[in-house]
Length: 79
Image (cartoon, rainbow, N blue to C red; front, side, top):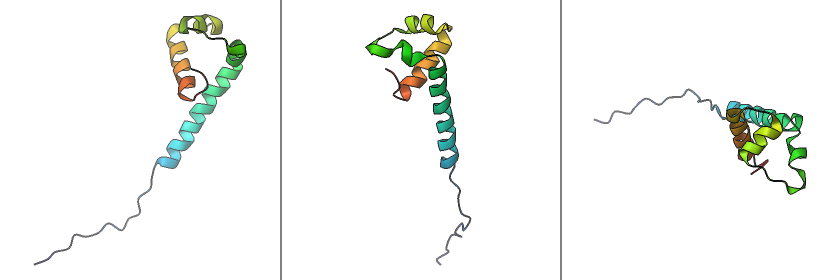
C-alpha cells in the first residue's frame, strides 16, 4: 500500500527582507556616527591609528571604540 504524505500548501515567508532592512539601518548608523565624530577627517591623508590612538582621538572608552572600529571595518570603511 502506497500512502502519500500530505503536502504543506501554506506559503512560507522569508525573513530575509527584514534582515536586509535591519542591516542597512545598522550600517547607516555606524557610518553617520563616523561622520559625526569626524573620523574620516582624522584619518585623512593616509593616517593610521592603533586602537588606543583612535580611542584618544574620538574621546571614547576602550570597549565602545573596539566595537565601533570593528563595525566600520566590517563595512570596509576602515582597516
